[in-house]
Length: 152
Image 1 (cartoon, helix red, strand yellow):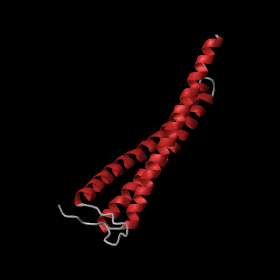
Image 2 (image 1 turned 180 degrees about the vertical axis):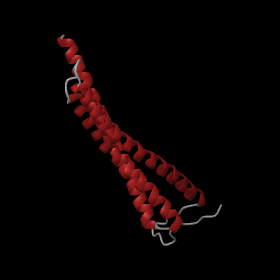
Image 3 (image 1 turned 90 degrees about the vertical axis):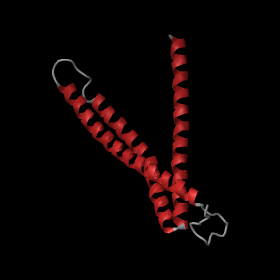
């Protein structure tokens, strides 16, 4: 198998084989596909946030059974918008990884490889911090449930 490098002037001696290049291109294509789907999903979340919020508000203002006014609609809208904003950043990092990786492999650009890997790191870092926060919130909710059950 031929050993080709992305940049023959790499002082650290890192080189990419054709297999490594192929794996990077394939990963970048899938990442770009998933990122585009993620952006579309975020768009649907924003549409759902305003549509369902408006629907809840309209139902709350109708005669008969009250749904608590506009509060459920506003809470739904705010919640979905917050989730969409949080979801946006890892998707953006994934997209930047993919576009830089594809550009780097086409043009043998060391800077683009570095930028691509930096965005990949940022995506995983964001997801790791988000996971830690989710675990913390789950533990706190569990402890509150235990204390609430004990008080009853």
